[in-house]
Image (tube, rainbow, N blue to C red; front, side, top):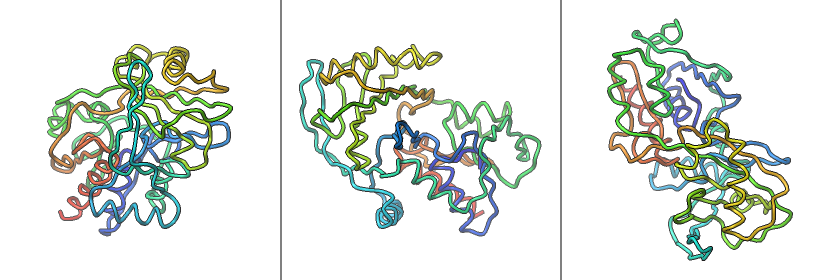
Length: 304
């Protein structure tokens, strides 16, 4: 298993439950992938996915367990929409969930007991399949399409399932304030060149911290991918212009080169020979879809 995000760990758990031995390799310091939380100013801050929703009963079972153990919490069913003039309109929707310990903590829970090697950058996946010169019965790439394409050997049939759509970048700005002064849990930003979404991290975590996380538009992110720290000032200016908040006391910028795919796929995963592909690039691009993709692929491999 290459990739220890929610899809990779879900796939690994399904395989282990089926009696198989699984080795999980991830280049990060800990499991999580784009359900990323970074400890800033003494508390976790969600910098990747902002929340998750539940529609599938199998995922609901997982979420119910997380909720019962205090790992996940209902957040809100209403976000705001902010127009260019700074006006707000409430937009009811499905129940969104957060995690008191940050969304990464949910992946860490799924990863409990798995054989995971972090800090391990895989260089190549070849026929066999061979991962960096070592043979395996099967290999799963649980990652964005462009990253999987870089690992697969030229002409690998699995590569034909990828590269059919673009992936958008994003920058996430975390900003701390002296006190809370915004009237929403989360807000979609309309027709702004810099920001697309703002989340109240204290609200979704449930600790009431005066911390906002603002996500950029793809076009803005593309201009600053090589120097993400330099994007902080214009993102702060855009945030303050929309919300009329004071200067933050601290900030942090996280770069996401492959934040989300453009469009959706009908297939929940890819499987060609002994090479599997899963993640939020399959099905709809959502946290739930990523879990479903990995779980379904793991079950399919067990069935073989």
